[in-house]
Amino acid sequence: MKIHHVGYLVVDIDKAINDLIGLGYELEGEACVDKKRNIKIQFLKNEGYLIELVSPLNDSSPVNSTLKKTGSSPYHFCYETPVLIEQVTKLKQHGYIVIAEALEAPAIGNKKVVFLYKNSVQTALFVKHKYA
Image (cartoon, rainbow, N blue to C red):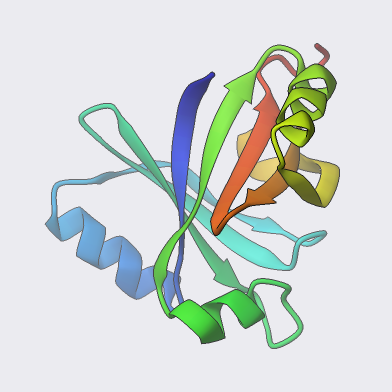
């Protein structure tokens, strides 16, 4: 599978955007509010690398517990796959557990994304084509 982006969890998304722009990143698209996940997202790109900044919208956001434990830090690797269900099944056979079932993600064109976890590595998968 190809890595699509690295998710980076941050307390203050505007400060993180400014810091990454100072490192040579450029905004990739518009900021997106994902009301189902209660987060705000902004993609930034630098020489082919794509970073997804993720910040909670409020105190009830599910990412707050991780943010309190780790502070601003890399959050997940997101891989694209043409066969989401088959890939999830394969990863489960290798010890991954699903921590968030497939749900449309407005930040990536409403493609379905599922989050998995294994040995301190959080992984996200999304289907490469919207209707695949």
